[in-house]
Amino acid sequence: MRLEPRPRPEQTVHVNARLITSSTILQLSSDELERVVSQEQIENPTLDVVEQRICLFCGTAIYGQSGQLCSACGQFAHSTQPPAEMTPYGCPTLTQWDYQQQSFYDIDNYGFVEVDRDDEYDPMAHIATNETLAERLLQQLEAIVPPDDAAIAEQLVGNLNERGYLDSSVAEIATHLEVAVEHVEYVLKQLQTLEPLGIGARNAKECLLIQLETLSELNPPHPLAYTLIDQHFDLLGHNQFAKIARKLKVSEQEVRQANDYIRSTLHPFPAYVYRSDTSYAPYSGATYIRPDIIIRRGENGLEVDLIEEKRYHFQTRSSGNNHDGHHLLDLRDSEVQRYMNHHSDRAKFFVDCIQRRWRTLRRVAELVVNYQREFLEKGLRRYLRPLTRAEVATRLNLDEGTISRATANKYAHLPNGCLMPLADFFDGSLSIKDILRELIQGEDPKRRLSDEELARLLTTQGIPMARRTVTKYREDMGIGSSRER
Image (tube, rainbow, N blue to C red; front, side, top):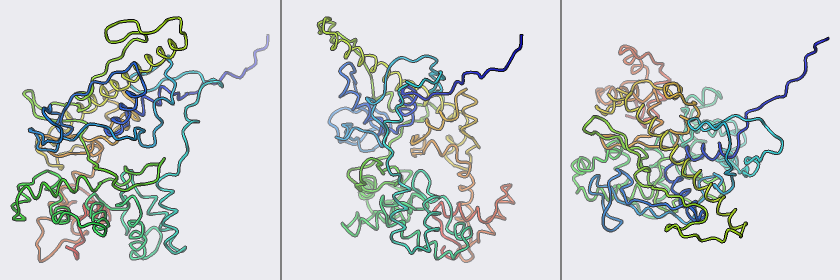
């Protein structure tokens, strides 16, 4: 008998609707999740959402009328009513996806493997391929700059990060393209005139100043807004209103009013306000960055709370009963029964996705808190320990992509009152930037340190660094060169 090799049937990893839904819900920001929860509550008759009235900044229970100041943190307690448009930013609504039970589902890593079949429903085919922000910016930019500057435009747009900031310095792009720095600066200025306002900024401070300058041409801003952003940006980020008031010799109430104006009018991350499925409408309402995770000092040390977990309580109803258990449907009506069964399964799956999101967020947050305890206790970024998403994934036995989705567009409220993106816990440059800032603040005003000198000082402190890296970090922090200082 002769044995011959036979082709083996191929099995492929198939990404199906259930995986997409779970992954999308994990990655949503708090604002996007709010819209999804509201949309699902409207469309699903078997899902009840009981929303607790809490401060969306610190998690404290709110009593009395909405629109008051939180007694715990002093922040404005906003209404939790969702806007009219429920669809999340560029994400398909949950009704577009199938909710049938699947096998081999990995509840921690938001995935599973199954045999690919030709007749399998592909939800990706129903997602519209819209124009990206980069494509739109490049198209507009190339229309207003000379054709010879097209390469510079491509480099600038290509080096925008997920927040809309320019990741590379002007000098690096000029060196790469072998053009004058002034030439790149000119194209960058043109980029910064485009919408969303603030696009192409080097950091949050520059982004807000660009927006403020543009908006001031239409309506006079709060008289303190520019000064707070330009001269007291760090104090403003720490909500140190009393200290700012003493420095400016104004009342604390005036500083708080200017802070409210900045929060309600400006947006620090321009790329986040871009909608791929609609035309851009600048500043159509107040935009607030809210924490997803609260890290506070408790009796047993640092503790982790999830705002969403305290805010939302879900209840699912069986297909044919109301709250009192009375039968509502005529079981002979098979179409109605199938409709209710489908929505009951869908409600259970939706709640399961939300709870899985909370479980993953809590696990990641608790690991980060334990690892970065010294930083959280002392509040100085120089104490941030190097940490990667791959390390967290290994420690929690999760996929690295799951960690990336769990930390995307999420914010932590730190014990010192600051708001910090979860992504910053994985930014190894922050501790170095903190030391660099101190070196610059401690320099002799009559003799400012050059980037070359700063690089040598960092090297003597055990932090070897090239001059161009110092330049990049300095520009990221919005600090001018030695001549500009």
